[in-house]
Length: 99
Picture 1 (cartoon, rainbow, N blue to C red):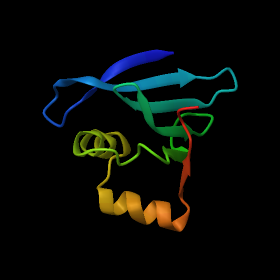
Picture 2 (tube, helix red, strand yellow; picture 1 turned 90 degrees about the horizontal axis):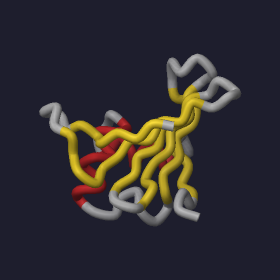
Picture 3 (cartoon, helix red, strand yellow; picture 1 turned 60 degrees about the vertical axis):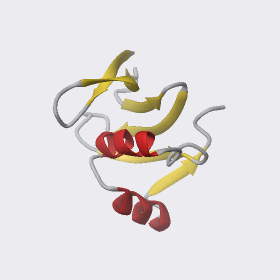
Picture 4 (cartoon, rainbow, N blue to C red; picture 1 turned 180 degrees about the horizontal axis):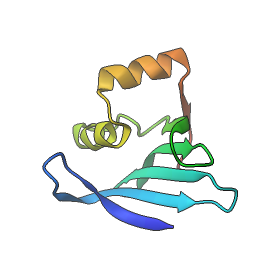
């Protein structure tokens, strides 16, 4: 498991915003976005790590604040409008990532 500060669009490391990477024995790579002490998003990649096969967002915290949203957008590589469309379509799954 590897923990790194998320990097801004300008290349700066951002305090209290983390990407956690877990390479499972089964070959799947999982990335988490954590803002302060809360898990915000989880991406599961295919067994080669080439593309995302599932994305989960925390039901309570996915859009908690402007700061969370700014770095969630960087993590997901999209805008809030695109994220909302993917939630509505069922492509993104809302769940409790902070059990």
